Image (cartoon, rainbow, N blue to C red):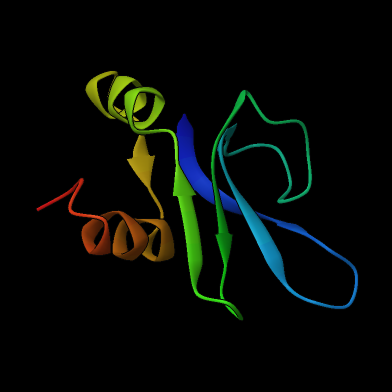
Length: 77
């Protein structure tokens, strides 16, 4: 099963990539595709909307935090 989840990047400051990843892999494991970027400190978000919509149409479930980010961006209702 594939999910949209956050993958931590950055050593001192928490910066996250939004990735499509198999649930059997760990958080920093091999991802299928990078579909966005989230910086909670600067409150910046970059989303590749066509890629996200593609994965959502295929039945990929976002995690709770990613779902909140997508709702703020008005991709999900």
